[in-house]
Length: 331
Image (cartoon, rainbow, N blue to C red; front, side, top):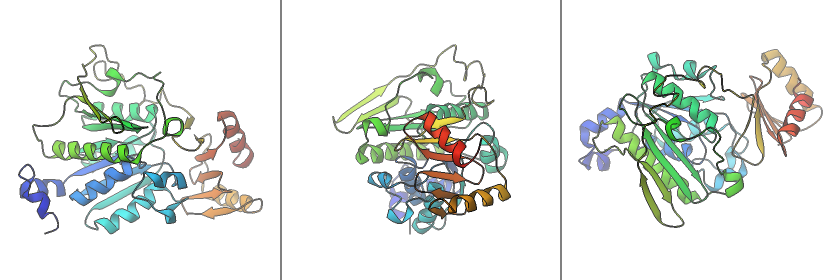
């Protein structure tokens, strides 16, 4: 009886609901978009979810990231999401990864041979990760749904490899100067709207519905504007035409990435083992306040250090972030 209202809808029905129950989706990025999309898919009865996020919950997230609450502040988003989603629908199998998805680990985490992924939801906040997902999906023939939301505006675009439609690199340029939630703000209404559209398209893709949107959808929640933009496949696209996967091979990878947060930089300059992580934790406890989450530690609410050596650092610029990393973690 749990999904009766969904099964009554003729486009889904009982057979569609059973297909959803056997399906697997990965959500990459659990911020304003990913946290909402994860909740909607769990409530809709998806069979399995892979949750991947590298960030921790901040107070400023709670204005729009409705899956989290004040008790989650400082906790890794992937862990917090898994805890809340299990309370929403305990029938959904959830695997979560507190990690930075990159060319080194994407094949291992998503493992197409083992996981039988039906689709991927791109809810990330930077172009490098988006292009990495694009490379991975085009190479492996996995559908994915691009989504973004900043200010009052948002986009959704379905990318179905091998269907002769455009991929992300056909129209989104590497040098694009995109607004961020830090510089332009973001309305919680547009985040919820974009996530709702994304999940709606995800269900269509899973059910092989013929009404899958082929155009780039643009919404302006404040201006009450909706546009459907036809995107043409680039006949010389480096990814979907030439099959040159620059991001998947690591050719375009970065060591430092600025996140969509309160002046937060992600740095991964060295790897550390369990002993080194324990020693670092004890060292930092002597000079400041340390909160231990197991997977990571928060130091003086300025730096979150993960057990793989990755760090999220509050800093005014990249130079200061690198300096703080060197000072407290090491060169």
